[in-house]
Amino acid sequence: MPQQDRIAATKTAFEILDIIHESQGATAKELITATELSRGGVYKHLRTLVDVSALVNRNGVYVLGPKLTEYGLGNTYSQFLLKQTPKIDDLAQSLNAPTNLWINNDDRCHCVHTAPSTDQNTYPRSRGDSELLVQSPPGKVILAHLPRERHDNLIEAQDQKLASQLKELRERQLLEEPLSFSRKWTSIATPVIDPSGHPVAAIEIVISSERATSLDVEYNISGLLTDTANKIRVEML
Image (cartoon, rainbow, N blue to C red; front, side, top):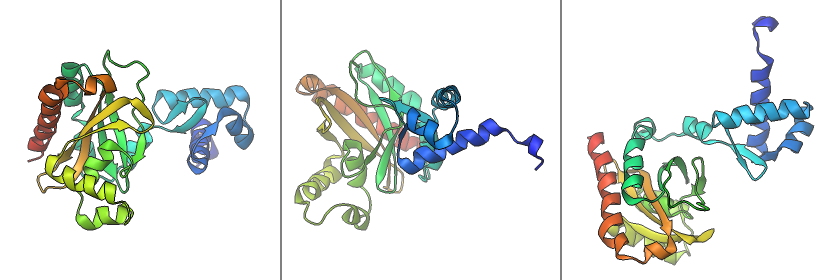
């Protein structure tokens, strides 16, 4: 390809993405040093990459964003699931609670959509979050329904507490658990099961821990949550 047909800015953008991927996150100062670009040039690239969801700025540290995560998802139903976000939005509006769609890939689950609500002060979740299946409430409801050999490989043999929790989830299909990193919020998650019985995603509602103690959870939230998961499953048939 002739040199004049190449766009230097595109090449630089991918150089920045490579650095951030290899270092699992980088500050603007670190990127300026690594690329030897001007401060203004680096910030222009960063603002653009954030605008298109290729990067996320987390308190000054830039990490790969949800758009790149979605491109890399190996889930067979990933593109179908990404088109189900209106159902997630409707659920969030009905319950006035932030609601998330997670898709699993290997040993992790990835938040590919977040529907906000008015009940969202200091909300700890965002699109693009990635968590280990064994450590995340939506990850656990997915993990519980994976083939036995898969989840046996992912959990420590001595972790009897998690093994017992997964056994219960295979029957109940609903997990209510405080977020380990923000105890004031409680996650309520259920899996989305494909027609063959394989878990392909999870829907998660996150509410304040105070609200989690109310009858609203048992008689309203849980029912609408599982109903939405079932509607998605029906569309796969």
